[in-house]
Image (cartoon, rainbow, N blue to C red; front, side):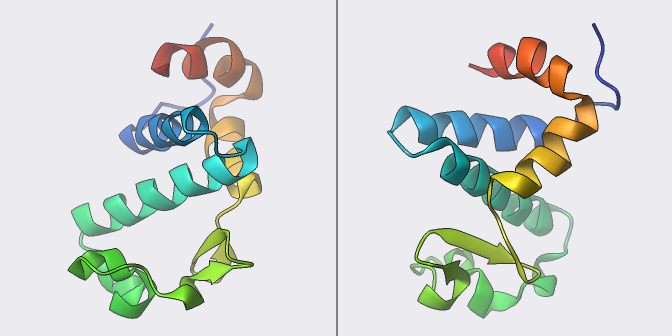
Length: 111
């Protein structure tokens, strides 16, 4: 079994963070959003795109707590105007590599 598209470090990091948050008791949909958010923030820093989000949107950049206005309903982080929920995770990671591959090979390999 092979993924439909190559697996990126971004995918691995997002899945790792998702599983880490699920292990602490966070609901799956929220954990997916958090994993995607963290992976996006880290990737933006690594590749010099941090200015896209601005320091007020990603407060951790300067060691601060993140501002309340970056959360929707007190739960979802927002990047580029899109709440980081389970739906973008499924679209950007799961569908990209194929749902069957993700479910049967990728996710179990990360845990």
